[in-house]
Length: 255
Image (cartoon, rainbow, N blue to C red; front, top):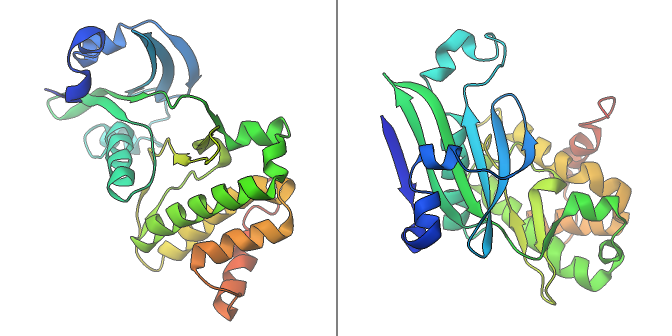
């Protein structure tokens, strides 16, 4: 069984042909960006635009990591979570890449392969690369004052819905190079909803992932300002201080 969706705006012309089905997408040649045991990301040029094609497959993970094969029937698979979470971001007003096409192939209910295609966000940089090259904008108060509140508010929108990203690292946040920059959240195949008592741990993990690079890159006052924007407080409460201690300790001994 094949389920496939192609955004109507891309259904004609070169994109309509290139992204017509999972079979045509898997046949496309492109520049490999990343890969792991269950997926690979390619950058593909169609017409005058570039697209990121993420291909998912059963992969070579150990049987124990795949629940001894049960994950191939039970779900949702990472591909389904990826496109569903991008749709959630859009619904929640969190800027993200345009979802061009997505779908999967199953046989007798068993997952075979899946695809998620997004249009390239032009003229953007991910925060991790900016930190590596010591981008001066990360020391610019005006720029930080525009970007950090966006990230804080987007994170808060997720968490207030009991949704956690689970991989909220700087590399998964893009910022465009305009005078009034916009921050985009991308790559969220493992994000999901959580309920107490597990929710707080996942919230702390998301915040710790953001702070993992921030503590080496941003002045302490900006890290504090980010958290206050996130919780919507003017000053830290006792509960805030307790959570921040957990955030700061989260990766101790694991870096």
